Image 1 (tube, helix red, strand yellow):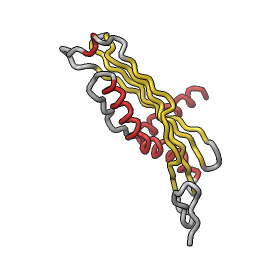
Image 2 (image 1 turned 180 degrees about the vertical axis):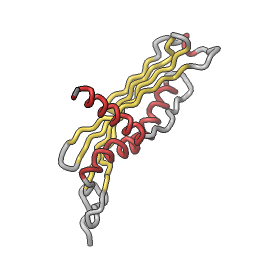
Image 3 (image 1 turned 180 degrees about the horizontal axis):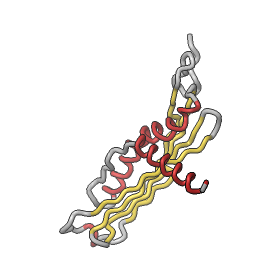
Length: 162
């Protein structure tokens, strides 16, 4: 009979890599409808929607990491804001038996990928509760986002070295 961990999750077998989600939570949620009720009337033009995505992480222990997924966005018609939102959604993850060279990409790509569907639903619900049709954020390629940020970091490091 094998021992099971306290949280009931699987144990790594024979050194196999393992990533467990231990907790998920909303750290911060803000929704603004600054021009209500005028903004709730039908618009002649479709809104321009802008969304920014950021991922951050901090190590909590040898195997545990807090990963933060931040979604910020707004909808505007011409220069008038219909709504704006800001969500910081976090998760605690345990990474075991992951080679050191693979750990950073796993934390910065796979963990936000696991958090995203929940954050997407929170945004959709907040927008709908604000009086608008739900906004379903398009899927995000976290691997491409990771590569883009790595290139930006490398370029910034290269400029500082000169």
